[in-house]
Length: 471
Image (cartoon, rainbow, N blue to C red; front, side, top):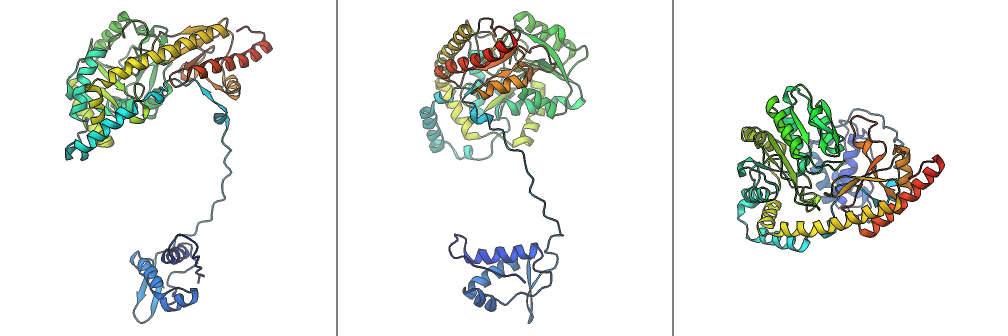
């Protein structure tokens, strides 16, 4: 027997309060299987509600199988309705979250675009037009490969700005580059062949490969990108490269190395997976065209609009050689059926009507100014620092000889109100880049860049004066 209590001050209905208390009493064995409940009239009188309220609660419990009515006998707790006895687990005392992140007010994280410059008004206008004037098909299920409008727009855009050679049928719209790389790994990693990966490399990509239980073979990277001489002797599933602005070291792969890489792929009968994440932002000369444009049959090209526009859009794309299209389409369908159709239509219009080109031109000027401010601040504050990475993208690498950016030092820097990212964090083979760290500037203001470098110098000065190492 349980006692039913009613609280009329609650927003929960009286019927639901009775239902919850009887249901919980059954599940927790306060009411035993086969036990008789008070009649609806009796219970209503004892708790001071109308009989109809009790009847409604009982009817719901009967419909869900918690109660059963026995003719001329009454209402009983049904058989098989209580959970097996389980001792309530003591609430675990989880360690308190480290509040260091709350202290960080200047975060030099790479890959963060200046989302305050996202063209909201134009995007909202196009979104409204798409919603009001698109056919009903736009609101139904779409193709796994993506909308025809966006794929057609990408064929022309990527040929013009990146030298990519493809047909619309080879393009698949994905939820950012992350999904594209995940599906590529799933598709090509079936034979347990290893993956040759640049080292160092973004931890996000590395995690995608390791999550798929792929064996990773690190290939050395220098300031000029991946070194083809370090590629494995046995054929890998594919070679993962970021040739236009390597992350994290920032190198741009030379044409000689690109041709060596293509020759290797042809010889090994494997694919090159080319991640082209922020190639639009080059501040000295024209961007180097894609590897895909030279060898489209051996390159899987992956791109994203997360860095150009906003990570919130979650729109990326993968361009497959003809022979892989059918396999990738099947994997994509089983992954998520299709990427948001309406967002694709908005982006297609944004590209076709020239708004993307205007936005990129605007952001190149903004990011160039931020980079120049960061370079100037580093040179003024650190006598022995070397800046690594071509004049492109939204990050650079700083090398300070004699300083080991190990976790304890990074933590101390973070406590001062600044966050930077050691290259060792992205390295597969540790120990080669101890005196280097990444500084992203895309999402910071000019004032934050200046202040962040000064705080960094202050913290490192304290360390260097203690250790006797000049910076």
